[in-house]
Image (cartoon, rainbow, N blue to C red; front, side, top):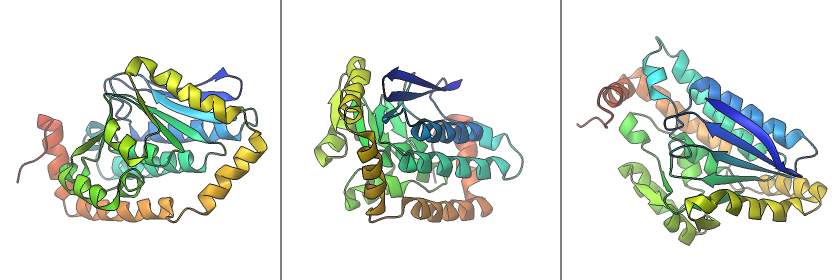
Length: 252
């Protein structure tokens, strides 16, 4: 189980997540991921970062089993703070971040992808927030950056997924390719960015963030406040316990 950083071509750095079986990250890994992305951007030799994953899918969110196996709220607080840290690291990275999404991107994965600068996806990729089925809230902030407002609300309330092809039609996914071509598709975009003057690109990243109409960090933390309420009310534990027990959402 690793988060690995590598320079694959001059100026192009990959950060790879590999947490079998489904890349559901424990709380410590979210902090590690955020630190890796931030460090890559701070290196003046880096011109662009590609965030990618090994295995069956890009990201399955937080490790619910870790959360339910931990007494008290430490794991919940750690997961929430870790996610906020990783999402912010993508957004605040000093250079553009390209995400290469394979398979599934759900839960916390939406936070990473929604804050990225460019998205490429495999043709089997799906994107979704099953949060309401886990007794939680969060990352609507980031889903709203991927789909139109009413589609976001519908997907959020129903816990349905959107396909890479749908997001391509909405204009949020730049390119959809067969999975075997995903890394090369990400590199193709990365090379175009890396060929530019990095001083200009770094300024452009900061400027674009500066004109963003939504403060994604504050907005996400507000969402997390409602998750804490659901936890204090005992609602979230009911849903997470059912998921750990059966692998399915709780039926009411």
